[in-house]
Image (cartoon, rainbow, N blue to C red; front, top):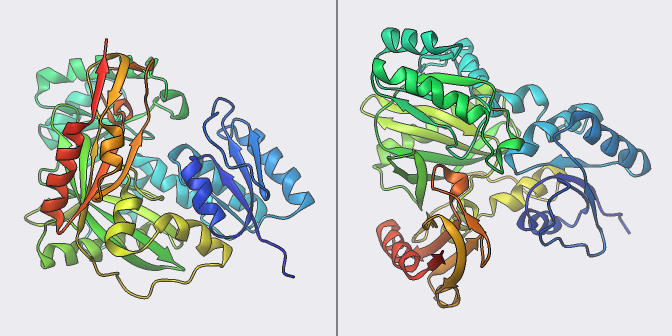
Amino acid sequence: MTPAKRLLLVGGSATHLSKARASGADILWVRMPDETGPADTERGVEVVHADYADEETLRRIAQEAHAIRPFDAVVSLTEPGLDPAARINDLLGLGGTGYEVAHRFTDKNLMRRRLVEAAVPGIRIVASALVEDEESLRGFGAAHGYPFIVKPTCGTASFGVLKVDTEDGTAAAWREIGRLRDSDHPLVHAYDLGEFIMEEYIDGPLCSAEAFSFAGHHVVATVTEAITEESNHVHVGHAVPARVSPAVEGDVVRVTAAFLDAMGYRDGASHTEFKLTPEGPVIIESQSRVGGALLGDLIETVYGVDLQELAFGWPLGTARALTERPKPRGGAASWLVVTEPGKVREVRGLDEILAKPDTVGVDLWVGPGDVIRSFDGQWDGLGHVASRGEDTTDAIERCRRSLAELRILTD
């Protein structure tokens, strides 16, 4: 009998663990010390609580476990775990994405520099520079015009994204950078907010390409339509397939493949965001993982492809590569759940939404007694509601109706 393969899973959720188990591998799951949510501890799963963002801590755990029984792959599908998992790939020689490539995705300044170096035809270079002080903000505006965007180089979920509209706004932006660096937000500890980048503002609708790379062959499963809250730049809605023309979709697919080649990314999932302009799609940023907001569920519903299971099965050799883009069947959409700040008193409508035949999923992170912060970024959302429909428009309408039925009452 062939022994089961062994996987090191760095961070992530109980859903990630479930998807990893589908590969048939035995799993060592390293979770942060304070992560105490549901965990499948059935046979074949070992859970270790440790600060995996600390390089020496994860190195020790991985080396000791690998010496007893070697790992076949290491995977992370959570933003704070991508660089740590890549370091272990390098350390143990497992053949997956290494740190040099992974960090081009987690550091937005490195991504911009890489695209300048690669100078790939068809990929527009967006002007960018690191923030040094208030004067550097004014200098960037003078050189590249207003408005422009300021954001953490290593942030995620639209946290800390600022739009500087005029020269008079540079002082306020500099003060806000200082405030963000000292933020007490409960999720900030997982990210380095010391460095901020300024980027030329790109106007146009937002979309993303959800792709999977198989030994350098990039397959875009779908182009996702994103709906953004203008007040804080948070992506509140996502829908597949995006309501764009075949020509625009073709441009996004082509630029995605060229971008991933330029980044040196050969294996695994990716989520690449674009602004659609009259001159073509312009890359905003990218992550070397499956996108959030229940995107994996939307794609599985419409295309029959589970990108999260692929993310584990492909490096373990238990999944076959896609040879062509999957065809959509209907549409699906998800929307961010928000409510007024305060302490949650009651949640209403959840059971009714879950019972609907068009509900794809509900991912609710709060319940009675939890304290709700002001809605300043994606992290301040409370979860997502996702629905399927006959097409994208129908799915969005159904999703918004279900969202309206979910009542989170606060004091």
